[in-house]
Image (tube, rainbow, N blue to C red; front, side, top):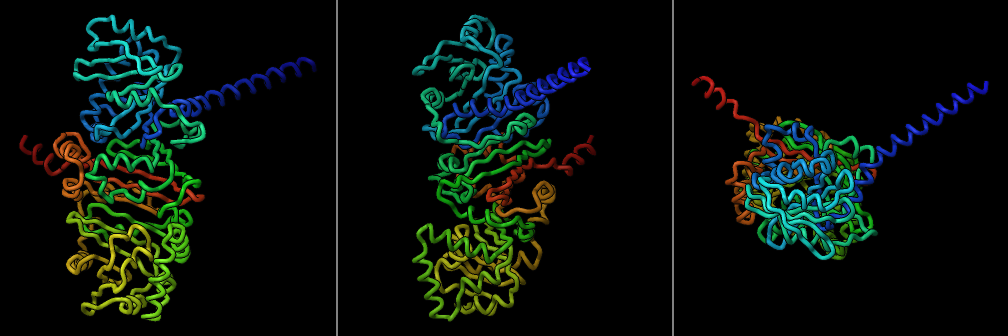
Length: 535
């Protein structure tokens, strides 16, 4: 009996030991990731995390996917750092198998700069770099560097004819960048323990993930101001204002960049337009099937409960200081037409409404309504009719107050009701163009490449941004800063090699489940067939 009790105790002890060991190992990646990310300057907008091991690089070997995403110059620089510096036998044992964090920062030189941050697998003495500096034919010239209290190295890569700066941030954590300004900023950075710049993944999810993407939405605005002339673009604008943090996992596909995960609202900060949609349930997206074939980019919004959406929007606008202006406008409409427009419109509003920008920079609003015939008398009452089908609103900013910020481009728009859709545009010509699109079925979903892209998207969402790069090219030419547009247009590897991108929010527990998809252009099978026939 004593022997049985003894054996049982040993088994229990072994079980406890294995369990503790397992969870300690599981927790290491998540906790360690948090420690490393706290050393990254908090003006970073995006952080990409991956494991520095052969299996990760083999996945994308022979693929241009990441090169098109990052750009030819940046990918060559990162490859040189990986192969020449950290791939050198003197350092490889310290950094192989370690998670690397590539963060994206705005810079004073009007460029987008990258910072690499990683921890060594074991304590590494800076003299290891000194030993490496003494080696010959390494492709590097290494000299000591001191920035404030931080020590590091200035590394000149002969293949790139460019300097790379490495500093020891803390303990076994190292950072590096081709930007002297950024590495100096990092050396002098003191994290605020009370603030968090990024949302961390749960430990188990981090441990099992191939790669992760972290986003601070409000930090996207400085990047957009550098990339676009005067920061003047409505591309992705509602997301750039959102007080939220995202942590997304990579879903591997050989011809697409796909991430999914959660966007958590920072409730201590003032809400924005997109916050209104957190109180809804995800809706099956159908309006995208009505996008014209000339669509450059579009924002699709969905509300499972349009009446609640209208009430929440009113509260949001009141909190934004718009109550007096809104009340005065609708009181005027009530006096002049007898309509309680806010209530009547909410009763007839359907589940989806979208704003589409075409390649010609036309703005078209497509609003699903429950009954177009019932809506028509209200629209006629508040408009001056041009003919039997087209009218122009008599009152300014109605779309903005009825549907929110996304409709701010329509001050006193022209309208037309087609079936159960209210169509808005800023000119009669644009309305007639969409009328032709609708009745002659000239939709984006009839064009080459769209079906492959659409098959990758989530079926339901509350907020969905879409961009078609081919149709957006002229808009990018007009709005991108010259250096960025030339890189986009002329580099063999760039975003022009992608068909389109989509960013989707689906409301869940007052936050958003998030899907990001970026699909590479499909090979031209017609050209391939002709070439094979010639040979």
